Image 1 (cartoon, helix red, strand yellow):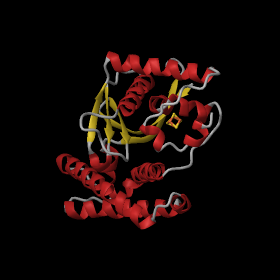
Image 2 (image 1 turned 60 degrees about the horizontal axis):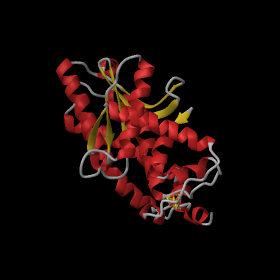
Image 3 (image 1 turned 90 degrees about the vertical axis):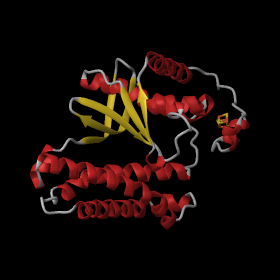
Image 4 (image 1 turned 90 degrees about the horizontal axis):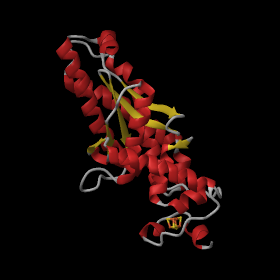
Length: 266
Ligand code: SF4
């Protein structure tokens, strides 16, 4: 069963995927990987801890105070995660303070949006404290899904639950392209739609990519995207079973590739 991320890696460079998975060559960790790991980790941890903030909302609390409660919690989580990953952060030449300054604005936006969503729900339904927590629609962070039928598996960054609809969300540290989402991200979210459709036994036909600074891009399933996902899955399977190293790309992707020396020496 293939990981959905292999489809994205194939789109980036089939040769690199072969070097990784068949020949076992590993690229050095990059700063963008560390940033992504901390962003994902902070989001997941904060989602688990938000209960303590939400049950603290009573009918007298002002919105500004409630938002500050969220900010305090997210801030603690982010600082803790950066300190826990300090060795890796240092190893890619990042400074912990710079990393904090880069990531914190993303969480400020997240705090504002989440606190406003919860506050408005509480006011509209007149529910507070523990009651509010039980009645609030919730997301499912880091949901692992797999399907023998599809031959795919993966971990969705977050699944938003809206009534009986389940919406996959992927968080990305880079910026969105001028129009829509990057191709590999469309494939990734599309594959999660298919996996979630199997998992919940109902059709799921859209999801989102959340880019840095909260550009949220909608990805809608269509027959072309579905075919492309299955074609990619079959190509990756053939690549992993084959004995031939795919050709070099020899384009600008190679300039920043961590396996360039190993690749060009073959
Ligand atoms: S150097 Fe270029 S062709 Fe080689 S693995 Fe990296 S991206 Fe692919």
